[in-house]
Image 1 (cartoon, rainbow, N blue to C red):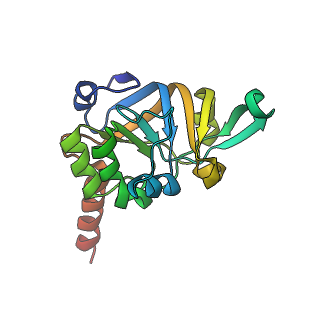
Image 2: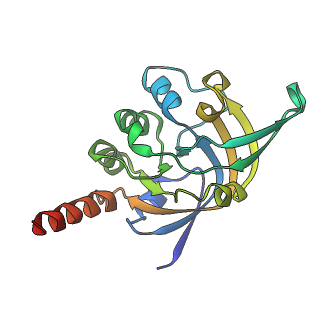
Length: 195
């Protein structure tokens, strides 16, 4: 199967062409967002100026970042950027996809039926990143362009990352297919058959 190269912001057409099981390499701007960001946005918090979620990819990640300098001379280097478990964002993700026009969500472990339906309805995908590959993913980050909502703490802030060839696998597509649900159903069936 060929690898699909994607450049952010993603178009609905590009996302709807993807199928569960596709390998992708993402280049361009990516935003991190974990529990605090999702809860804040879902609760009516304002998207910071400088963050454009329309067509964007949000990465469930709390990167390990080294900061140098102060004020306008601040600079950042990401040393580790592994995915965090996505199911924690299930109460919020569908609403954020619909409200802000997110096209991609990256994390690990998959998400539930509500997010899958939002992907189908709005033209988005869930992309699985490999746990334990935090340093590999950090090497795909060319630079940190900015950081917002630092009051939530470094792992929970919105980091604006410029990435090149960030690898992931489509595991929930915009056609209603979830590899996570398929594996769960097959596992349950095998378990029932064993007893």
